[in-house]
Length: 363
Ligand SMILES: Cc1cc2nc3c(=O)[nH]c(=O)nc-3n(C[C@H](O)[C@H](O)[C@H](O)COP(=O)(O)OP(=O)(O)OC[C@H]3O[C@@H](n4cnc5c(N)ncnc54)[C@H](O)[C@@H]3O)c2cc1C
Image (cartoon, rainbow, N blue to C red; front, side, top):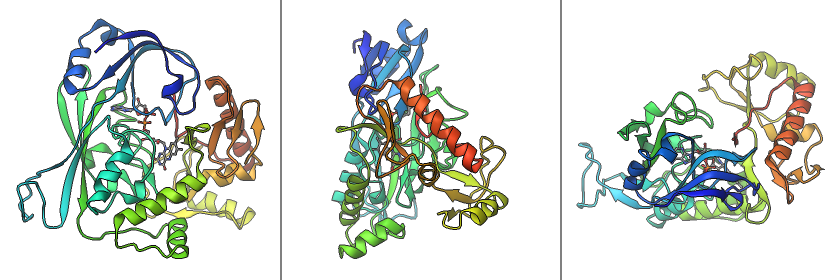
């Protein structure tokens, strides 16, 4: 383990913005991390754990230490659950299986591992960029599934003491693109591994409109989880820009939740406004100018209505197929992307009275 100085992070963030980290270190094991936390470069500096850099916008050089996570390993584990019937010593329960993945693994490699056994529950989350360790941070989600639906627990290390703690699913306070690790415990824990619980029996969720249509149009056999994974991947490849080709960090903003009154007001004005009603939604969103509620309005639609889709200012633009995704057309700085985002926030606020909240972590 070697601590490097003045390290260029251009290739390690999917927006591709040129940024220098004062210190940079790559960790390959738990013991690397436990050794690191007692070193002065770690103790005396701001810290940033970095996975795939696919949910980060750097707006200035990072005057601290970047810890680049390369801790690998995926295994099917034995979870002692009395109601399960174990048919082999390798934790093959009757209906479920538990897989432990180390945080530096690529998320989609975990998906591929699971679907190679035809396990169920993870297939809708195919092809989300980034690492396993970042997945609980914002409770990654796509096509009608979220990490919280399959997560058993998170194993994390308190970076001030080196102590390990297991967070059960319900202790992670998962919400829409949200978790305890983004809020109360922000910057306090390093996520070392996650354990997911998947179904061995067919357990599909193909109700998400776009996915359903794709499956019907292409006559896909949905009795194999790999086929659903491939359908999701095909939709994503068609709709989302590949960060290896053009810099971006996926959805820049979260979708917006509003209450019944605001919903009614907007629907009267915009009868075609798409929405999704989430009865279970209770967590407050104080940043929404006092609003919270069960009606989810796609932020991409709000942005598109303000005329931003496909629009470009300087080196930054809104993707022409998905208005929620901002792209770096080449040479954009983090400040330029941030100021572009502020213009979008302002125009959405002026038109709809709704404040967009970034999903991307601004550093
Ligand atoms: C084209 C594209 C499509 C996307 N689609 C989706 C989507 O469908 N759904 C979705 O939810 N997201 C999506 N994203 C966002 C992104 O892929 C996810 O948020 C992903 O989980 C980020 O992983 P990462 O390893 O790149 O995290 P990074 O960007 O490296 O880090 C993100 C945050 O997590 C923290 N972090 C990372 N690893 C650890 C760790 N081990 N311990 C503690 N903190 C850590 C970082 O410090 C940072 O605050 C998309 C991004 C792109 C570029």
